[in-house]
Image (cartoon, rainbow, N blue to C red):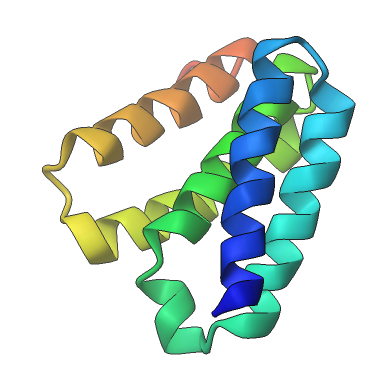
Length: 114
C-alpha cells in the first residue's frame, strides 16, 4: 500500500513539473509511478485503477506535447480501456480521452481516424 502511495505522490509531482514545462522530468516520474502500479497491482486491480488510467493519460499528454504521437496514442488507448471498464462509455472522462486520441490523429494528418 505504501508503494502505491509513493506512485500517487510521483504522479502529483509530475503534474506540477508538467505545468512548469519540465516535460522530461515529469515523464520520468510518471514512468516510475507506472512501474510501481504495474508491480504492485494485480491485473484485475490494474484494469480497475483510475490512478493507473490517469498516469497513462498524463504520459500521453506529455508525449503529445512533445510531438511523440505513437507513444501518446499507446498511453491514451491504455487509459481509455481502463476508463471504459470503470466509468462506462458515456462518462465525460472517456469523452475527453477520445478527444485526445482524435487530436493526436489530427496532428498526424490522419483525419479519417480522428
